Length: 108
Image (cartoon, rainbow, N blue to C red; front, side, top):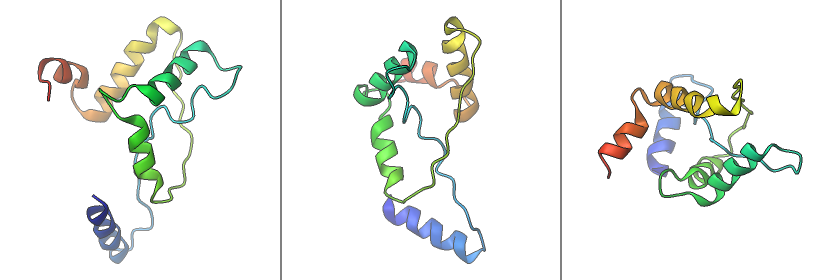
C-alpha cells in the first residue's frame, strides 16, 4: 500500500496537484475530555476496542504516517435517538451502498 500511495503522490505532483485527501479518520479524538457526553465516551471506547467490524485506530495510524494536516469534522444530530439514522445516512453517502446490510448478509 505504501508503494501504491507514494506512486500516486508522485503522479499527482507531476500533474501539478498540490493536495491529497485521505478522507476522514472516523471517531479519532472523540470522548477525550471528562466533560464530554456519554455517547462520545462510548464512541471513543469503540474506536479503541472494537476492531472486528472496522479498524478505526489502525486506519488512523496508517494515514498518520504520511504526516497529514488533520482538520476536525462534526456531525450534528437533533437527539440521541436519531444518531443511528444519522450514522446510517453518513455511511450510505460515503460508501454508495448500504454498508451495514452488505456486511450482515455477505460476511467476509
